[in-house]
Length: 362
Image 1 (cartoon, rainbow, N blue to C red):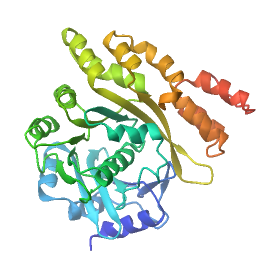
Image 2: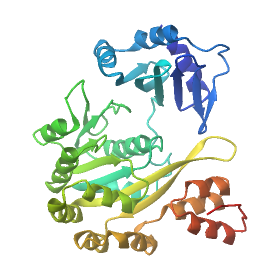
Image 3: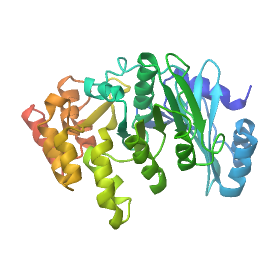
């Protein structure tokens, strides 16, 4: 058994999300959003100790990559505990790593209490659905639940393209092929291009990180496939703008038209600390109604937030709507909701109407 396996077991037992290892430091874990030193270590780990611990579990080709580039990513599975997404890096102290815990059991859409509008996005036969948010906001968990819902309710072919493969989807009603970058394919764009020849119904693109991948994802959604993708954007409106602005000016009008025809919805999410421990998600939901599609075609993306404000009957909501619900249900502290709000002035006013007085320098 690898030395780090015991750390992973303890980390899992306490429900921590991440394990941080840095040379000349005591290992730390992220518990309910806070980064804290692990209490079973008294002394810092030396450069040599960290190197030994990391090398013990690292695949050979990843260690070669780490020695050449000082960065590498891979997934590590520990039976009975779960999978861990690993990132190795080098900094001024020496080698270090961060491990993200990926539970063995995929939470269902019911267990995550995903709104009906989000679940309905899994019912489309073609189009583009985006799940966005900052790193560590739970995008992978939400996407895994959505893919699992399709796997449980439809008889389709699902292809996932990930770096690395995180949640493992066993076949239920669907055939699921999961491909890992650098292990099963060279890049997102290469795998996505190849997917068109692999008779897919649903394609999950783990990260739309470059122009070519984004272009092929939109084209794939246009040609009769349901495509799920992720971006590191904080709001639905900024997601649309980010995609369009990726392209050269002379291509942006064409991309706008393609998005207007293919985009089905955007879920932008944030994780918050719950009262009493644990974390919960606040969701901003954009549903691509005919009106929203017209705004995309006409380049009026600045009107999208207003459409979301009046689009409750389609299941749309702004991030502040979701944050307000979490405060009203006594799930999160008002100060935590204000901290995560995109429009802080609006959130402050909402909190004041609810009877919460918060000191703010807005």
